[in-house]
Length: 396
Image 1 (tube, helix red, strand yellow):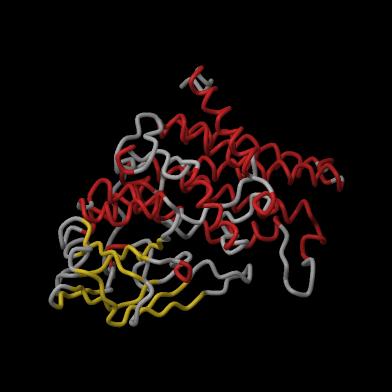
Image 2 (cartoon, rainbow, N blue to C red):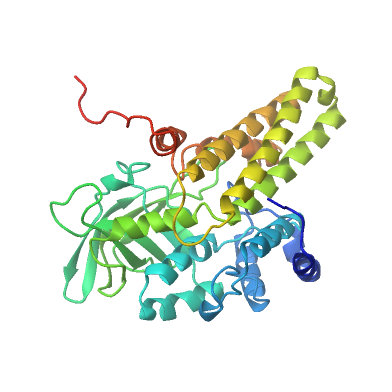
């Protein structure tokens, strides 16, 4: 694996750097790169405007085929863009679910009418999406979905509850996995519907977290409606489509995520030098370990993307998810130890958390969402190592 830029890569990197330097200015620069994981509500209106600036420069949906509004960028160029984007402290993206998950799914499985209707608005940053997967009894075990939909003439009528729905309160549409065949169980009888959020029958309740922010929501569908032709793939084939969407979740954008980790780690090492904690041999060793582990994560992610094509996530993707989520949680714990007593005090009575306090609190959730650590270990054991599957059912 040769990580050096080729001449065409160097030219593209300079193009990205120049454009970002010219446009990450004024109110966009003032955000300081904020708006990422655990901070999604920060400066939302400004970041929404930034999506339109990106779209005007043709920097949204880079990897999409040109015919669907993208640039058809190679994996290498997508990696370069994500690297330079984070280095430039550009605003956190607000259209990740549309661009990174739904869009590629529609390109692979959607009808021409669905593509014509939704893809241009995702490219333009004018329509936002959320993901209706998890339920109170169907989190990492997605096949346990109970939300149902039934046909009423030319419309699907959706009833049920979703939970941990990121940015549902700011989204225009939701891609919803629901049960459309009465009496079906597990993976069978599921369908993948596109449901408008601004309608009677949709109630959104924010979930306030330890960070006092509300990126996640409960969503209640009580007779919500969507058009009959807004099912992606065939009715009853939703499991296959839903897994394809999850596969895209393990894509190139993760590299930008990791670069934000590097920025956090660099800042933490700077704080440790300033307050003298870097002289503690145990703290110094933990910082060194975090640095080495982050390098390992980067190289393994790049290796996993080699030859990446289409909506198939190898089981090894679970190794990367388990690795980065656990690493980031440990970084939050290390940050609290580096800060010492100062890390226990908020900046004001309004509960304004600093960067490391947000990391410590929010990173706990990263070992749960997107497939919990326990589920990832099961996948690794069964599909990568070939171990016997976990026992199911009543063991008495």
